[in-house]
View 1 (cartoon, rainbow, N blue to C red):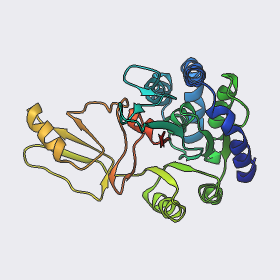
View 2: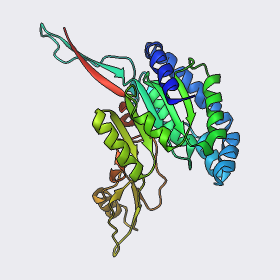
View 3: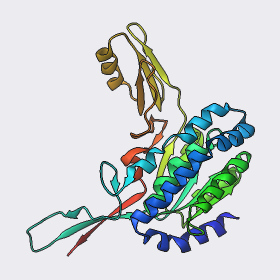
View 4: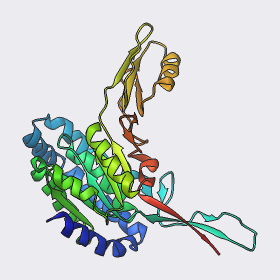
Length: 296
């Protein structure tokens, strides 16, 4: 499949998918999450064969509940899909209503080193909010990403709503610069992110970038690091309050205290040269939504 054909199919099918009731879209994605958890060992095996990383690491990540999927709901603390927030001026003769609508066609471009988690962090919120997706993956990840495409097909997604495209960098540039792509979601190097940001800027296209970064580690009381990057960092101290005070002053998107694991139920992304926008949590889902105000 080429960029042109994938985009054409995504453009044609997006209307039907965006009009699918939110509860049905969420149900499809929940079926996908269940399949992914059931096949965690297979996923880990494929990724290990592709890039040589430890199978246990990918098995754990594939088996855990997906944070974007958990946030897609019709109630609770998640994002309320397909519902109008309501009138902005109740009681007045003129009424304004705000609607949440899908961005359109999303180009998701991911790296080779952690393909499954990078893919799901983009495609689940994009599909859940009614967008169609072209997922560009590294050719090295063809086995695992082919399996991802198989799982998505098995859960009942309409044909063409998502296309998985193994391709090189030249194809990536063709995809992100395509006039019919409405949003770019990219994970990769800062250098490539700058190039994508320049293309998006020329076209005034929506873009979110999760880029590289050198992680700062601060060991109190006599050490403190500085960097042009700001993806994540860590603070170690016997005094939690002191560590928290330092963490609040570190300009990174994520800071862990005393080796705590990163929580992916909140926004994840970087400051400075480590990116633009956030993934995960309700904030990450919001990047795949456009807001429309209707005055009556």
